[in-house]
Image 1 (cartoon, rainbow, N blue to C red):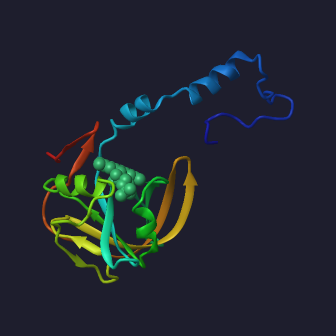
Image 2: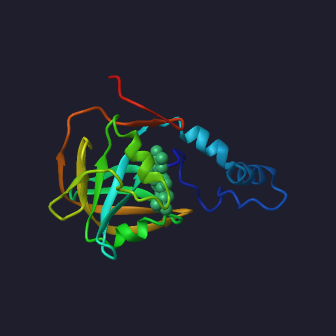
Length: 191
Ligand SMILES: Cc1cc2nc3c(=O)[nH]c(=O)nc-3n(C[C@H](O)[C@H](O)[C@H](O)COP(=O)(O)O)c2cc1C
């Protein structure tokens, strides 16, 4: 069992906590009272890489993108990756309208790329050079690897969506160390 316990029978099943059940109230309170600053502070202790998710907006034919650290591989067969995007993103609707998107793994020399792609309303590709992946999505110069994908599923998850995308093509790009995001700051990998 996922919770490590034994299966409850009808006779030993614990009834759902009522309004005056203190254990139940405390459980609910601990779940609902987690403030956002604490959530960010604790989750921020999980070091991640940073990716630039890019695409060509079909409405303007211009490249666009956003920075994300909520990215993971999911499945080898079929090859799937996933990333999380906030409902408030103004760039995601443009990316999902593109035929393919590219996940660029940023290097430790690309903090400025991360900041530029995270800036809302900015010209995301101002000063950036890029080439098209086979499906046309932007591979940013200086990225250490790229993964071109097609969006397959979008799951609503709280204030974000979990996007599952099928990998169409991928490759290494420039040699270099990854950009690391940890406790709200940027660093490199010193392994
Ligand atoms: C290091 C870093 C990591 C980020 N990770 C995510 C993420 O995983 N998901 C997300 O929706 N936004 C993430 N953002 C925010 C987006 O890059 C961007 O700021 C947001 O989508 C608003 O811009 P937009 O309106 O152009 O989409 C991150 C920003 C930074 C600087």
